[in-house]
Length: 91
Image (cartoon, rainbow, N blue to C red; front, side):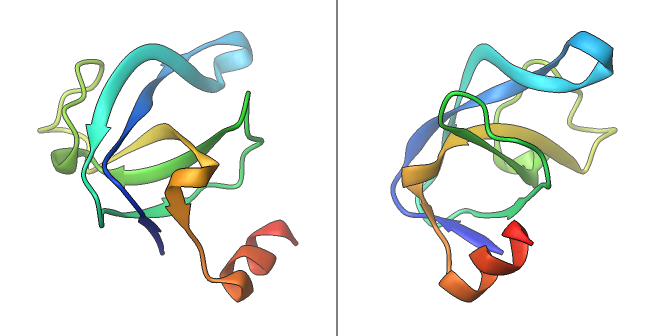
């Protein structure tokens, strides 16, 4: 698990080319101390894709009742990651 260092903005996901999820232009506020999980996708424009419980973010693109987790895109500098965890995700 990773931790959000400070309250910050993140971007919701949108379906794109070849049915991949990409960062949209829609922003959501992520509270300080939120826990997220890294997903094994490529970062785009300095934004790292992470999985967060849908009820913890206001997500206009997805229905909270039917989806437990959402993928959001957050600036890497806003995430605290133990070095050993980070290395495991890079393998």
